[in-house]
Image (cartoon, rainbow, N blue to C red):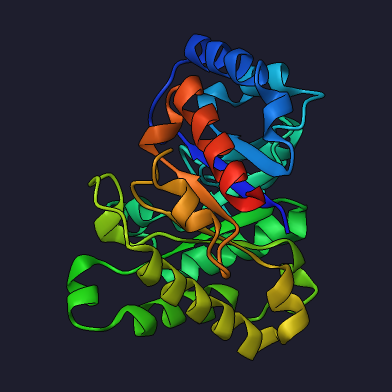
Length: 255
């Protein structure tokens, strides 16, 4: 299974900055062989990124979407709007949307279902807060997030699912999880998916690690048995550092 590494820019980069980044990243495209590389800009920069990346191996992702096709949902974006721009992936349930904007598992389930039915590949984010970790509730939290997000979906539905394990306490803090903790959580995610859908489906699901991922630590996550990639925040904002991170992950896996 190839690695899948996604750049989540969050609320960063103008259209012009996006063009510069994508052009710079493409200069090193040949060095990313064996890695599925995704760029997830803000909505306003998706058309520009799509134009630059068209025809390359680098895929385009969005940071969110609504579950309805259209309607009175001010400020929201539908799956068809994303597909029209050449978007392949969409991040759903990121902890910042859960904890800052009040998204619950019901909303996340609706988004995952719509994404899959529309042909988008969802990156479903799960992870515990620091308090939940200290209370030894990591597995309980992750299981609830997974089960409720996937409720009603069949094995056929979730064949293109990506799950990003992002411990909330590690996001943007500079304090990454230890490889052992990341492997334990990711292995548990696989257990839950296997218990719902069976081993064949579980083996096809990508699991990424996210949370203060950098070029100097990505290798220790990329080689873990249950993890096949990363969802990268701050270290993805510069084309050079992101490219170096991708190459470091690739080198760790093939060495």
